[in-house]
Structures are given as C-alpha cells and as structure tokens.
Image (tube, rainbow, N blue to C red; front, side, top):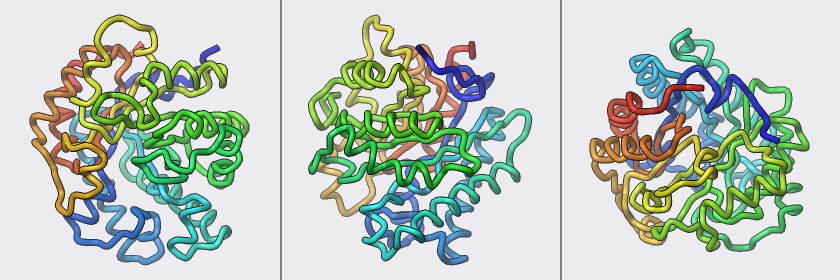
Length: 319
C-alpha cells in the first residue's frame, strides 16, 4: 500500500523548490574549507552557523518570490557514525549536531514560512561510503542498522521526513527505507546515476524503485534523482510506466561531467544556469508527479532561480 502524507509531495497543495549544491557553494564561492563535505561541522562556530544560515535564506527568498513551498534539507549529509570521527565528533556530539541542524531548519521555517510558502523540514542522510562509488557495500540489514543511529537522532525533532540523498546502490537505499519504517518517519529515497542513466551499481532507476517498493511495502513517500545532469538520465524517462509516478523530485548537477571527472576536477563546473532551468521544464513534461526541484553539485541560487522560472509554470497541478 502507498503511505499517504498529504502535507508532503506530491499530494501537498503546492509545489516545492529546495536549495542547490550546499558544499560546492561554500567551498568554491565562499572559500570555506569543508573536509569530507561535512558541512554540519560549520555549525559549531557562530561564523560558520551564520554562513550556513545565510545560504538557506537566499533560496527561501526565491521560494517566496515564486509563491511555492520550500524543503529545508538539513546540512547532515555526512553526520553519520563513520564520518563523525573523521571530523573529531564522538557519538554523543554527532547526535547533538544532528539535533542542532534540525533546530536551525526550524528557526528558518519560523522566520520565512508563509501561507504561500509552506516549509517542510527534511533530515538529510547520506551514504555510509563514497557518494559516487558503491564500495564496501552493505547488506540491506547492515544498512538498516547503521543508518538507524542517525535516523533515531532525528526523533523528537521538527522533521517532516528523512531524505536519503545520493544513494548509489540498492541495498543501502533499502536499508534506510526500512530503518525509517522502523522509526515510523516518512522517507524519501534519492538515487544518483552515471552518465548512462544507471546507478553506479548497475541497476536502472526503474529496477531500483521497484525493488525498494517491493521490499518495504511501498514505504517511501516518493523518490528523487540527484547528483547527475539531466542529459545522463533523460532518455530513461521516455515511454509509459507507472514507476515514473514515483519520481517526484530532481536535484541535478550543473555539470555534464561524470562522477569520476567531477571527483578529479579542481575547479567548479557550474554549467549554464538558464540551460539547466530549461532542461527542468522538459523533465516536467515527462514526470507526471514532479513536485520538488532543486540542485546538487555546482548549482547555486542562479540555477534554482532559472529552474523556478522555466519549470514551475509547467508542473502538473497538485492532486
């Protein structure tokens, strides 16, 4: 059965935008060193906290201007058990920073939410390993146990859902969905793909969605695609198929480069913001439930503004 959450996409009475590439913006535009892409670590100082806060406000203003909702994705992509020690965090300190991150999202919602711009808070969960390469793969049960620690740290906070971002192999995505089901929190699964439109582990997007839905009783509220340029997966969306109804969000990269090329690149490839916005308009024509648009690596407020301009008028009316 499908688990309905009427304040969440795609059933919410509005469409949503979200932010762009948090870490790439802070590193390449703001000149901030962020080891391991652990942006949550900035919250430990006032200056770092203020910089991250200001980052989100720019996107919230875009949502207000467009009169659509906004999804506040917490800066906790790396705030899990294996990555915490890399930045000097104990288990208790890591739990505290996850809570602090959600508190920041709550403060932003209190400041910017309006009737025209409802805000949802998502607790962001990232991969245990490398975001681009499915190395040291876990079983679904191992992933379920590993990610339960961070998911449980979100319990009692103001989250509306948990989003697993940049999932590059099936078992980890499945484990996170099962862990969210255990915790009784809504979840979103976002897969990344290579230039051939397949997950780095080889599955098609359709196969990955079908298997997670099968093994969880269709638990995820919806699915997304992130950290890939639309040209990498657009051709996989042609034709009919009910599975496409499950894709409600896209957070694309600005660059057409492969993951391997991006990993080796020493400068920011921010592509063409207006062109990317127009490509989102095309995605809106083939994804019936597209409700959430935002960016990933290399994107910033310019790209999301272009997405809002070109794609929002063409998103299907909310059901």
